[in-house]
Image 1 (cartoon, rainbow, N blue to C red):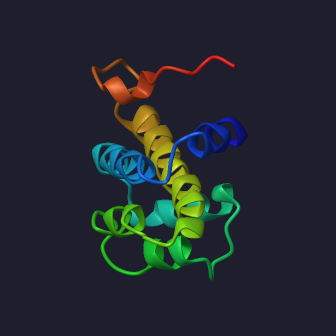
Image 2 (image 1 turned 90 degrees about the vertical axis):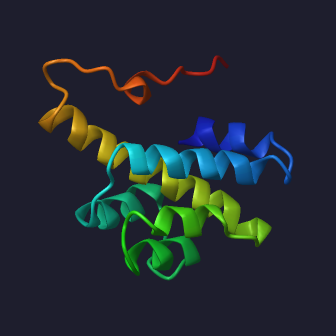
Length: 116
């Protein structure tokens, strides 16, 4: 996560919203579930009162990542990034175990790792 945050911080304020929208897309593709919420918040290191954590717990799970990605306060975007990464990670782990253990073609299981 620390490398991801460092990477996210290297991007300008203008280029961060598209990154968050791409993460939202990954969360939807990995089929995040309601039960993924608490673990995602915990892993992201957020308090339940942080805006992204509140948003993920209110409403349909397939709609909330888009709301989180659309947060406009600059100080909320890093929290949004952390949470969306963890929502994706939790959903991806479940999908790998339940549906993809015998192999699959889901490209997001093998996202490239940046050097450095």
